[in-house]
Amino acid sequence: QVQVVESGGGLVQPGGSLRLSCAASGIIRSINAMGWYRQAPGKQRELVADITSEGSTNYADSVKGRFTISRDNAKNTAYLQMNSLKPEDTAVYYCNADLWTYSRGREDYWGQGTQVTVSS
Image 1 (cartoon, one colour):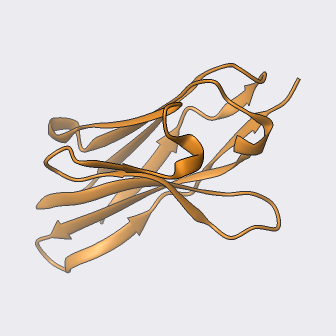
Image 2 (cartoon, one colour):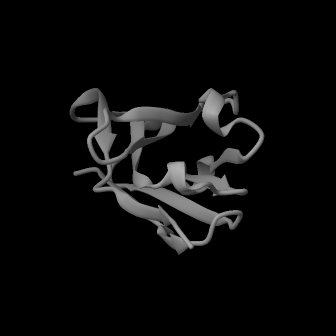
């Protein structure tokens, strides 16, 4: 059974920084892309950033230059470094892993989410 678990959320003042982590565990054959999404109250879930197994990255325009996604393939872990945080970054942040297992083939897995609140 595969699990995806996020950590690192919390309360931070505007202009501050947070680092989110996302770890995939279980019987995993390989991981394709890993991504961070967020959902603010009353809004749809949106892509924040994603990264392929080769390290190619993609960012939402709203976070370019402030957020950096990275991953450690040996640890099946992705990170999201968030700098210069703004109140509009407040949301629940979810990790997604597009991966292959030996038993079920290729599937998407989601974490439970971690709350990020930017407020003074």
